[in-house]
Image (cartoon, rainbow, N blue to C red; front, side, top):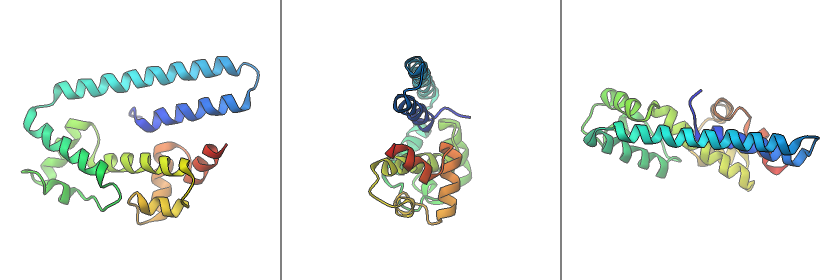
Length: 165
């Protein structure tokens, strides 16, 4: 699976679980998990640095602006055609360009951003799972649940329970 922010969150969650359980040898398990997390973050940093160095200037700027737009408007409908409409490219070409520049399909990137925000909201604990789904841009709760599980490995309810401890 591709390295992602959510993968790093999963490692942090496992560290928290080890500390809470305090079973025999938990200190060693925590150190090992933290080392894995550190390595993961270094790889994410290196991968991002390599992608930045590879990007041509004009097209990369359109992709960067699109990523910023997605991050700022994740709760709104974000369709490829509309996103590409802000660039000089056709939707089909922009889709390929976005994939080349980010290594994500547009929909995958949108889902990563939305699920990352959903994790933050679920950790905060104030809103219901369905409210969180709607806030981050999902109009179908079952689709939100499937996507959340596919990206994090946990259901939204399970994620919230683990955050509550």
